[in-house]
Length: 621
Image (cartoon, rainbow, N blue to C red; front, top):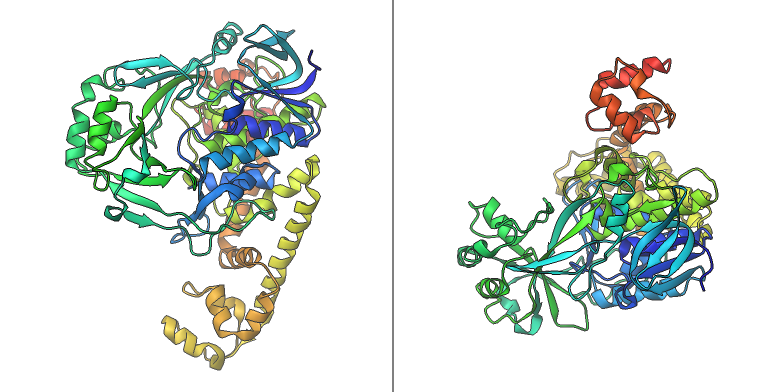
């Protein structure tokens, strides 16, 4: 009935979709298996993509040929560049998406791919022979053969939904949990754990008093995520900001005795950086209000997402408390918030390629690895899909360094440090933030994708080359062009900047902290004429490279030093127990995790600098 697929991807959330596309774009024949074809790429939680560090990840996915950025650009209703008051290393794009359009666009793009087939049914197990994944088994007892399997099960593995004292099986509201896979993996020797996440109630926007809330508009000149020619956003929709108050908190506290979080029914660890409203009230008792972001679900629906009010309290308590929020006095609820517990597998059981150590050709990606967030899941799916294809063709795995991408930071953290709580990406997790900016993801990663042979990368590579050449040309212009006092002194006086006494190079003027390219274009017609031949994106890159040149060079020097350790390879079957100078913890962890390089070994929790010195001495370094 079925051919032997190169790759079967189990689960069609953000991770599964990117995994399928990645393998298919390299030439693999892919089956995407999902319990429900109507929920492909569904935004289970808030209808938004990007944000701090997450926006950088979406741009990296796009630079590597993934589809998340393209889908977001086609379906967003608002765009904002966050952290513009800070340095460019912190700038993070974020888009409010149309939930229904987002899922529909993803499905259309997947169905248009000639290398992707679909199967709608629960996958209950993996077919394993001689320590290798060779297919999947479904609820109807079918066996579908494959050369590699990627598991992207999200919150569905033995998912358990909690609302107050009620609990019922489910992977998402209205959808059943997935059974069988966890039990099989444990039998195969995998270690499993439980995690928890949650979602807020959904509200009827017609019942809200918008005048009582703060309006949060999008950027006047909205940007986008994809480096391809996606449409410009028109007619942005506003978000709004509301606040809880002491009365809201008091009402919520009346339900604490029935809260599954406080009475011990929830055993899984929840996300530290996205706590439920009851958790916020308990942990931050000194605060008399908490901010809420009131977000539209799309252009053609009145459904509203109350970001910041995630809750598993009884529905009657949620409803009463909501109605005490200014602007929500007449609120009507579509459905209450809930918490969900699900199985995950500590990611220290994975190689850097996201292939499992115990079963060859079996890959894990997304929330099964203990992460939270669409973006974190999507990038793992992409890397797993790429490596599943490369593995089948006996090619070296595609592994991004911490200095190359936030994706590299995320995966390196997971496989070396593991996680006992839902892992979320932040800019603070990256050592080389000034190199890993959202504006240069194409320069960092598109050449790597082009070299891999990912489908349709020629045009992207050509544009990336044009961008690099344009930034260099703009840099040369600024270094060779002089400006005189009479051209700029009036402008500098207005800025409160010291005036010129003689001609200076334009480059020196740009380096002043209160001067930028746009201001200079307004007062120097020749400069404006020169720059008008380039897109704003190319100009922004040139400006950042010039203004932050010293910082970029210092960070690159740090990378070069670290890369020397990354080049010292460790043999996978090396016997660390023979090195008695290593600490007992180091011997145990190095034997279990089998790092590929000295650099990777140095980042394993519990490995000390003296342990690394022992390894280097042993290797003659």
